[in-house]
Length: 335
Image 1 (tube, rainbow, N blue to C red):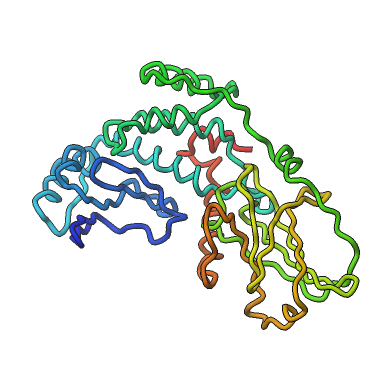
Image 2: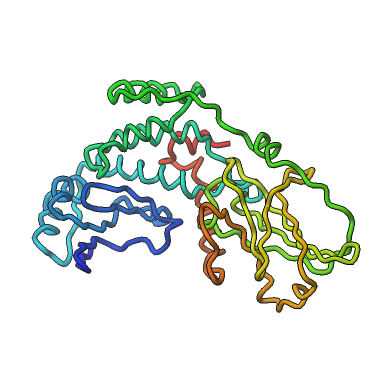
């Protein structure tokens, strides 16, 4: 693996190119990253405090490689060995990635992950690598996020480990019901839409970086329609919800913002706003609908042309995970 040094950081290996395929672990003095699509067991690293990182580098790269990194080498060889700590770190990073990026999609056949199972398995995984972590309260916070213990019989061992870890750390996980998609749809309310004449319509891919994971179907496009009704022009928006409730959503079309604050009879999230007739004159390249969560992220200037291909690769990867030999329990029980 190559080693570089830039602006006071020691860079080990090739950092993943895009955040949606990066599984991160925040270790003492460094960040470790695994590219979920590459399948490499050995992570890359960005080390900002070499003294702190030296305490555990040998567990991730081996004693000889760790000594070479500390000594200022330009390249290291990763030898064979017992990599239980490194593998545990990879599991923790992968579960954190799934919590942030898992592309649950009815349209693409990617099953949703059970949030209770995921939180429980992540808490145990974080506990397994506690000595590596930068945050001394990471395990306690992970346990507090578990809420109700997993009830699936296949997760009995996991529930026992959560209980043991919670007792060791003096944490009492708070029981909390998990909201469902149906309750979210009811809370969102519904809005009736009358008849009209459709003038223009189209669909745009959803940028995952602009909405929290699970709030929307990761593979379904957002649909927009320009409708003339009773002498006025309206922009109407439809998006497919995901398995998790989330913050309020909005959409931007040209210079027009649309609150997504209703549901239709099929459970799709909807929005509608009156627009000036000049919107009909937008050139085709500008007829792009960008869905975002205003309290989470703001849309950029232009969509990423490489985004759809990268998202397709992540969707294919997630679709394969439940049957993968190294799948986590949460992935195996996904439905």
